[in-house]
Amino acid sequence: MKEIDVTKVMALRFWWSYTWRHVLFYTLACLFIWVILFCLGNFIEISEKTSDILIDIFGWIASISISILVIKKLLKQPYDNFKISVLDKETNEEVKEVSYGMAIHFYWSYLWKTFFVMLGVLVLFIIALAILAAGIIAITGIVQNISSIANIILIILAVLAIIMIGIASIFVEIFVLKSLLKAEYSDYRITVTGIEQEQKVY
Image 1 (cartoon, one colour):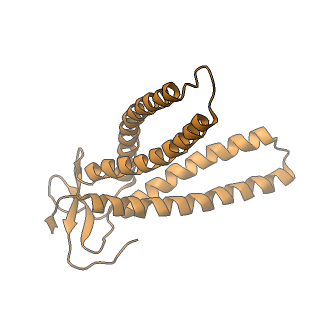
Image 2 (cartoon, rainbow, N blue to C red):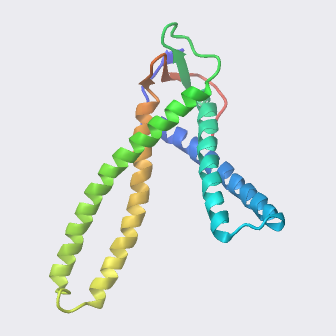
Image 3 (spheres, one colour):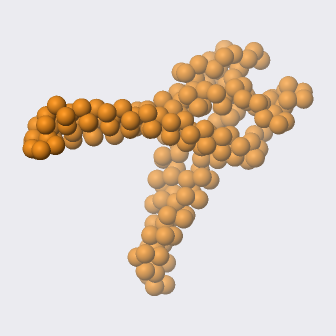
């Protein structure tokens, strides 16, 4: 079992394996929650506000639970030419089973690191967008007289900003995952090992 460096492609594949599973099972869970609440509504009078609150609460619980379960599976998942491995720090041997505690630790690290890195990216992005918008306003002279062309440009910029933030969030998540797939914790560490042939994961 030879350890190898984590590449962006490996992090991207882990991200994709995690994302599609989370989206699929979260969607099914939300549908299940909605059906249960709808059925309960026929027997117990539930206000629309209470129903929305319950959907939000159970939705968050479902999202977190599904994320932990998916990560628990993926932390020992083989790909075509590499494998995510969790090793005991004392023996340097692969653990027989990834615990829920390990999965929760990984998920928490993923959340807070992604949040703070993305926060920094957003601050820089907002500053750059504000400077660009101010330049457009100054050039078109819409301080005194609003220009329809300038409004169209600003709308296009807003749409592009949303798209770019979405793309940036994916890059940030991959950047964070790249660091987490080669990380050490108190009594175990996560690494990537090279393999010759294993079952592919999409």
